[in-house]
Length: 353
Image 1 (tube, rainbow, N blue to C red):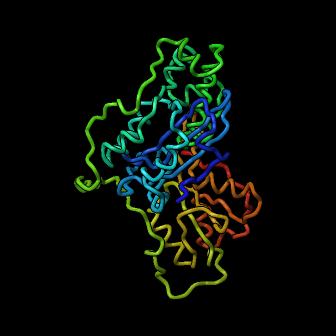
Image 2: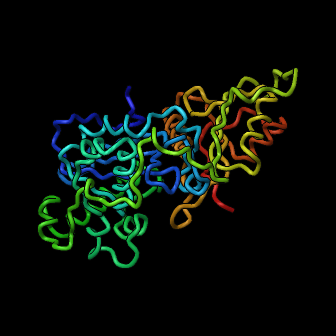
């Protein structure tokens, strides 16, 4: 199975790489709940390749607070591979290479906790990495707060889609590169040698708060009130016996992203009742992407969900009639008061009122 959702440049296990920046997004507060991973490969102090993978967390369970941060929903990962499947494909590309992460303890805990859930042999086999925290690298270069957004801003590094794992990994890589260059070093090894405070640590040595049990021995997790099971479009059937073939949503493929003012299932039901076809993923066959309420990133910039990012990429190709709708436009389209020949250009990201 090819688990690559997106890769900008093919890499081989034998290709020389100076270091790899990595970033995870999680579905809950549990480190064993990775739902996305982004990687940025650096050669000669340049990011030469990036990749992004969706991961199905255990039970495909999500906390609403995490969804608000990264915009990944249970339906986005319903058919995604589990952590081990993804990691077994990535491991050959990462073996023998230094990993860098911003607030590295978090990302390395995700690796170790996720592997430990399958048993200790998987930790020994697949957690054999050394890692460095880019926060420590930026200690003398960035004053004040040193979270990813603050460091990126201080070093004039673009961070267009914060909490998109791939974008965050690229920003982390560029922060590390800026630190190396600011200290007039040629590579990461020379930088670490010149900075005694930099600690090179082992993922396998990282202590986890609780030793996870293998999935077969684990109790069924208690579902929190924040858990929202994935919505399966096939379960949403029309509540009417007749469709108006002239309705602008009739037989149109509709996808939803972000929060709406009403329950998403209700919004889907209303669309199905006028003949729309609900889809969970954006493709070139998508007619409408309904963009609900987004959550601001650092500095008041609106974050962009994976679905919207993919939609914008499809629109940039110029080979699709896909149209992005705000929630208000969607409701007007439902009522037939907004004509379906809307411009196909991406609309400005909706921001928090």
